[in-house]
Structures are given as structure tokens and as C-alpha cells.
Amino acid sequence: MTPRALDRHRDALLARALPDGSFALAPGMQARPEATAWAAVALHALNAAPAVVVAARTALARLQRPDGSVPLAPECPEAAWPTPLAILAWLPDPHFRGRAEAAAAWLLGHPGRHWAKAADSPSDHDTSLKGWPWIEGTHSWVEPTAQVMLSLAALGQAETPEMAEAGRMLLDRQLPAGGWNYGNTRVFRHELRPMPECTGHALAALAVLPTPPPQAAVAKSLASLAGPDCAVATPLTATWRAFGLVAWEEGPPDILEPVARALDRQSRYGAYDTPLLAQALAALASGGRFADLTRRT
Image (cartoon, rainbow, N blue to C red; front, top):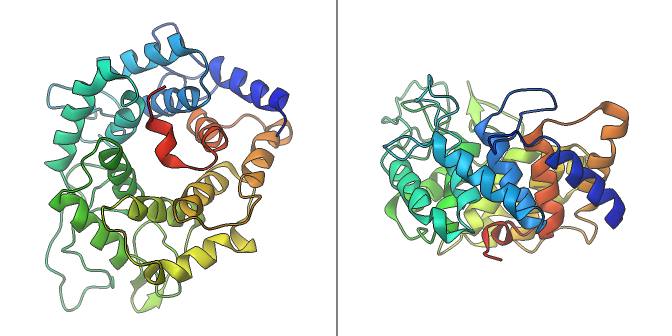
């Protein structure tokens, strides 16, 4: 992607900043915390508009509840899945370190709901292994678990029992043929299909464990994600394909090319929602290295 094209997409993201520092979910729409968090992450990675980034971080701080969580909306405190995204947005700025640590403490105390697997369970995965849910009090799934793991590792809290168990949970949810979906493997003895964005999330998260699993344990998933079937120029797939493969030093040399193509396709299909646009920009700015997104300037 040419610098001019990247600047155009960056400016499109900046145009979604609202007067209070938050970011609209899409042009002309209201603010949402995940849009604000991903916009702050992307702009920081691009080394662009530092005042806008601080305003976005401050807007997220206003949403944080006294218990440390960052809910999707004040009237829905149980939908606190934006909390790890807020951590990623806050981390590069020491001024917000306390906010990030409070959010992490809440996450460590609020895993998903789990139970011993019943003999007649229709699902094949181990329901006792804890990760993190989308909604408080519900079962753990792949993407929220991966996002929490990435945020805790970036905060320096990778060596916790909760992180270790979450790593085991992700490995248990890996499909026998390779890859991950939202978090089921077999249902009524039928193996489900993988999803590239879920596979990328899981691989990126497993790579940040203090002792990552041996590469042989995820070899089928790496091969699946690196293959032509996953080289799709849609923003979420292309972004997390890059993050997942680069975390394991895998993938083709043109790993970011589908990300650039996905951004350029907005001229044909219309503007992406802010989280999609920001995640793609973050992947390009970091070269697919997720750890670089939270480094201090």
C-alpha cells in the first residue's frame, strides 16, 4: 500500500472522532467503546494524532466502572467484553496504567461459567476449562478469551494460573483438522468448520504464553491459516490471519497484501465499521506484530 493510500484510510478513521474523544461505530453513528479502543490502538500504531489518541483513552476511562470493567453500555454492565480492548488502548500511556491494572484485576476475577462435562453432552469440548466470555456469567469462547490473553500479556501478567488455564482451553477447542471457530469442535459427533479470524485470534494468544505450546501442536492450524483458502481480502480475516501467522513467524512474505486490498475495497463496497477499519490499519502499521501495538512511543 502506498503512503498516500494509507494516509487516506487514516484520515477516514480520524473523521469518526467525536467531540467527547470517543469514536463512532461507523460514519454518522453513535460512539461505541470497542470503536474507541481500536481507533486509539490503530492511531498509536500509526504514530498519528497523539492528542486524538489521548482523548480516546480518556473517553474510555469515563466509561470504566468502579469495579474496573468497561461495559458496552452503562445499562448493560454484564456485556463487559470491551474491557481487554480498553487495556490495549491504555497501555502505551503510563498515565492510564492504573486504569489498565484495574481492568485486568476485574478480568482475572470474572472468567466464563464452567462445569464438569456431562457424559451425554452434545458438545465435544471440555466444558470445565475456563477462559473468558462475551457476556458475564456465560460460557467462554475463543475470541474473548484470546483478546483477554493478549491484553494481560501486554500488561505483563502472562504468568498467572488463569492465563495457563485459558491456554489449555484454547488448545482443547482446536478443531481436529486444524483451526478454530467461535469455540465448538464437534456437536452431536459432527466436526465443525474453522473460521480464519478465530484461528488467528487463538494462534496470536497462544504465542504470548510464557511457555507457548510446541509448534507441532498447532501445525495443522498454521498450515490452514497460511493456505490459499484463508488468503481472503476481507478486513477481519486478513487482519487476524496476519496477527496469528506473524506471532509464530509463519506465513507468506506478502502476508499484509490482503489487508491492504481489503481496505481499498471500501471504494467498491462502502466504508467499514470503525473496529474493522482500525484493526486493519493496526495490522499494517505493526507489520502484523501484535505486541508492537502496545509499546510506548
